[in-house]
Image (cartoon, rainbow, N blue to C red; front, side):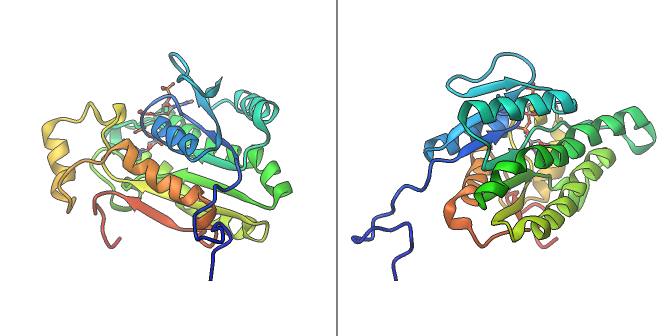
Length: 249
Ligand code: NDP
């Protein structure tokens, strides 16, 4: 039997051109994801906070901790390319400190950046998906949410919250044709991990069956798959891209 995206000769037909929003799309995993989704033919908008916007994308400057800025960003994207039908809540921060050196302010900052912004983004961006009865909401968590790591209590907590959020939203939005999934990277070579010293890198690599760090493109490939029309029966899923770090958790 032919799938709906195949023509009579069995060749895969391009799917609809969707409006995509990727937060933190100016570098690292966010930029790789934006490029990947653009290659798939979509209209891709990104948010960025510092520095210059990436070339060739509709880009809105936005600090995701600020509800007004985020509201503005989503509105601009809607006006420019239509309401987002694929949202990748990627922007995030890492703050490392031992538990007893983690202040309430540090903790609040992580929760605002990594957790609350992800919920706000769903709230702000879901309208178009509900109307279209089609949507993809993709969160970027971290293997730290499962296995922890020394010095990342607050970061792990902020990322673990995304797992519960994903599973709940999958229930709430499933009957509207919207899938909600979470990608869980292991140690990926981006600016976020440049500061790790050799001992820290060894600690991660000893627990990683593939014994290497991953690339932003490898994470983007998983996001691209979940965003694809063909991933239509996958929701509430946790997709590790970790070289096996945390395998079986
Ligand atoms: P980078 O540090 O390279 O990129 C982080 C991105 O988030 C940047 O675009 C940054 O914008 C943006 N950002 C951070 N804080 C804010 C804010 N308050 N408002 C708006 N944008 C913000 O890291 P990665 O690409 O590695 O990280 C992407 C995601 O992947 C994050 O959620 C991270 O937690 C997660 N992750 C990464 C892992 C890794 O090993 N690299 C492992 C597990 C998860 P700006 O450039 O303006 O600062």
